[in-house]
Length: 196
Image 1 (cartoon, rainbow, N blue to C red):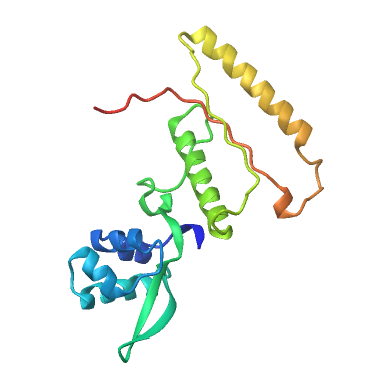
Image 2: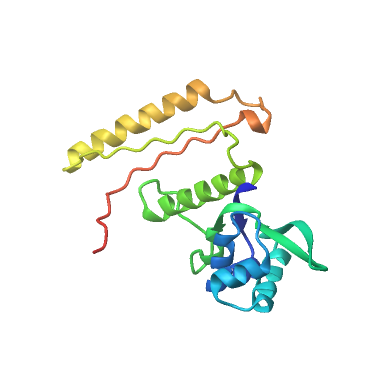
């Protein structure tokens, strides 16, 4: 079972984003038959079978085993991933994809967040559950109460970021294998209050 199944097409999204199918995916964390699912969900096996087949056709569920029970062959189905993520492109900006490269704009932050989401989803699709992927994530809350302190912080961060890029970047014209290449992103934004 892979960590992440990345839903990149509208057809896949239409298949997955139905309440019954979401619940079926949740319950297929381990192999189950359609009659087992039907009993757990209070539905008919025929209705569950239809939904499972649609999920299987979209690549989100697979038949992992067949057993003969009282002369009937029962299929055991399981979800192919532990998590299902929607590609941000499915619900992206209205009006095109042209984004400003202004490093202090919210649009640029959203663009970086989308790239991070895509990259993590691709890594999750390539790795099996439990497999280590060399990565690092850091998070901190800082206080920047005035413009002077914010400007000093931005200068320090930009200098440190550029120093890291110079120290660990490759000289022009040199290339590494894809698995030896890493992406470094940095984002700083006002902490949003949780809605009540």
